Length: 123
Length: 108
Image (cartoon, rainbow over all chains, first blue to last red; front, side):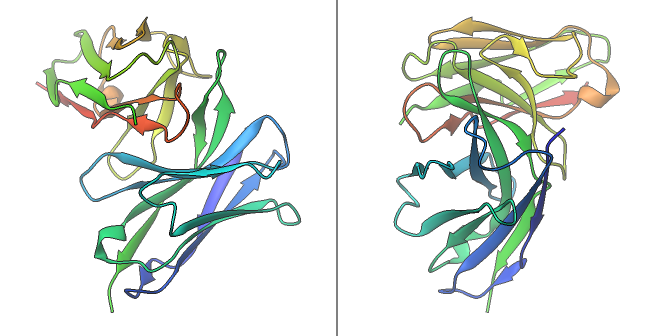
């Protein structure tokens, strides 16, 4: 059973960079079957997919965050990370890491999730 | 971007009763739809993928149906632990994957 354990600061200053890490256990992040993703949830709101990265180098980001987000895979530590640059109050949310698994007819769904990290943006 | 619309926003159900949550896609997503359960303060949990396939360990009282643009999540007999938020998500069209706005299933 894969486990995803998140870490990173819960407080980021405006205009700075949000950095979160997700440590993966019991499966290698260089397994071609899986993509590695970040999702966020604003307080009291629904889920917003941020983007994914794959061992092959394939990445995709939501158009609304593409200019500021980067997802990195570190195969030496079996972790992946999210960087979100130039944060504002609108980026305050709970951030989740997740594993994406291929569906029977294409596409990828989120079959395992991290515990979530509440990020506050404040000086 | 595919817009996912869930209804109702809130569903009040008594324990033991049946609950039905609907999800509509703004364009055809085939069977590439998942359902997630989220309890307050917790991460979402995958319930259903490929529109109707239960994820590992999910009880049989949860079922999914539909294809194309109309989907349904049914909980046949609500248990106390089922009162939560439920989200649909499409993963058919090229990313970004998109979620419905959520449905809260509350105790009547």
